[in-house]
Image (cartoon, rainbow, N blue to C red):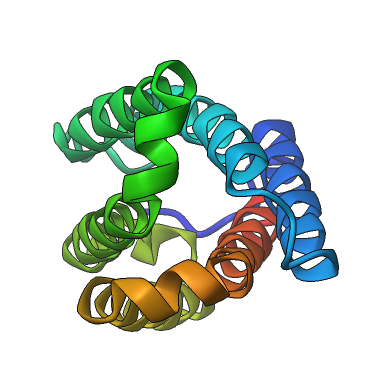
Length: 174
């Protein structure tokens, strides 16, 4: 496995910027309506799912390691996004549970597949591990206290998306 620079990854960079923008919006106005959060995060989930599907191809191209987990996560993210977009009322009721499960599953899968990013560099590997552990913590917090999570969801979601955005931007420059 070579660790030489393979060029700038515009998709990762743009996805990272998109996630950071969404996180800043969530931080700016925590009293914004849950309906707008449901719609925004539904769109983000669909975009992230599509990105995951393309990531699998790049993972195999760069590392020679073929796995189905990015496909599973991509499909899962797309389904969550479509559910949020087409059932806004139900999404508003269940958003804290949906995000808790999404954070937990996405972060746990990230921990199990983190070894595949070692080819990108040791620093990126450890950064991925730390972000995934933080994602698990946020997911557990959301799952254990849905009432509190509903009140602070903008902050928690903003924090997660900020971390994911920074991770993607870091990946773009590898």
